[in-house]
Image (tube, rainbow, N blue to C red; front, side):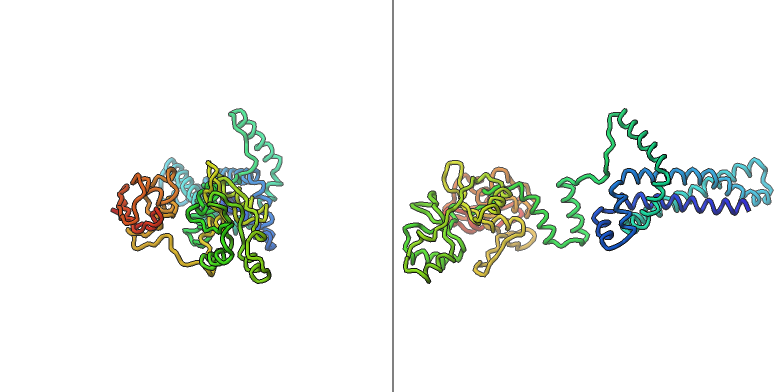
Length: 430
């Protein structure tokens, strides 16, 4: 009868150990957002789990206390119980008393240790890691009751721990759930993408957002050379001709040259004036245009756009000249990628011919070329592929030239040159 009771107690303490182990690992592994979703769905266990994860240090201490008590009880009761069970069998074999005692102790230790490690530790630990949401919700309510029942002991242990940590020069954190750094979030998002939990577009958006704050207006603006402008002295018909040809929504208005941008016009105002008025100039429809330095971070530029009603700004270089223009669309494209409307012509900035050959436009950012090829390029010195190649040559190539440049295992073949700029390059792995 006593042996049967001991066996029942052994099973009980193994299960008790398993309970606290699965609770501990499930609570550490589960994400707080997962618990909040379950709790919002009406799960009682999830509501208790939400309370637990908000006071994780205290409840992890409760788990440790439960594991320790179960382990001590298992060693105290289990080994003698197993020894008594196999003792009669060893007597039947006619072994001497000294051998029976040694074999019984070793066998008892082996059996209890195996049960403790396999059923009390490894199996529950694996279950908790595999299904953290389920087991955190299932174990939270009993864990809360255990914590309340042992609160005086837990209070004493926790304060003793904090006191010893202070003596060693450390302070106890209040919450295990520390904020993630940028790099940690990037790794989490990348792992989620690799395991199919998020779409590629979602992964790209998040990655672009982290790069967003590292860029300034100069990195995304339309350069001065590429600005499509209208001039204050142009005839109304000539302005309409430009609008019909280029099909943009807003046009900077210059007086004299591109260094003197005095405002911008919107095509809606232009067409309304054409239909409703006999006045054939742009003085009455020209809007004011804000000026920003090219060094302004694009997140500040976006706030500036949001604060006002402007969607376009002229970018000024350090010498006071016009560096280019920037629009809201340019900023949004840094997050979601290229935005095309019904008037945009398909113009692929990068065309992958095969794994070793690429056709790249000259105004593509050098960082994208670096990501494409996997070769380290001087992105701190040059913004675009065109700037990098002209910098390597030390001159601006003539329109009829087809220069080739080798750099760190890559061969850059210039395919097109227009307006003193390299516009198309074939990149091959040497």
